[in-house]
Amino acid sequence: MSLATVVSIVEGANLVFMAIEAAQAALEKAQKIGAIVATAQKEGREHFTEDEWKEIQKTDDEPRRRLMEAIANAPKDA
Amino acid sequence: MKLTRGSYMYNVVYGVVLLTFIGCAQLGLPAPQNTEQGIAYIYPANGLVRDEAAKLLKIGSIKKSEAEVVLSITDKVRSAADIAKDYVRAGDQPAAQRNLILARNILKEARTFLGMPEDKELSK
Image: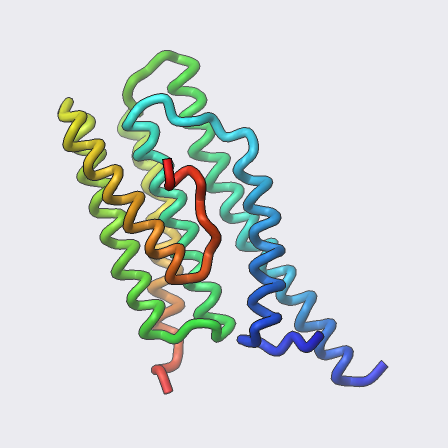
């Protein structure tokens, strides 16, 4: 097995891990909102509570922070 | 199959794996029964686009300036969603619905820009 092949395999594995990590984050967000919606539906509520809205908004607040960090750490366009 | 960072095959493999898992994540989610619940789903959907942009930036698939465009677009989605939320809680359903539709449309454009597949929920 050549070094190039090994590097390619490692790159591929890293790619899969990154995708799994992103998917896990997406799954957690989706499940969190799904649980809040399911609870409201089960209780027959038209509206979410303030605490529930805070949790819902966090599913966008944290990714915004991560994107801003990624932009701050990225090199300028060539 | 050469998997050099930023190469076409790299992006394809990454996208397929990611979408497979995200597709599974869509299973079991309760469908929104009113406008407020529809607005709630915009937030994680917007977060997903932001996370996708951050990942694509880190692996070199998009440039810094493009990521900045996505940040700007997703901030507009967030504004529309927040406005929709305020209207629905104030009892103005038509205004809430208008802003929810606006948020969805902008989000669809952001997903297209990043090469993400169509989200059927956003097309409803």
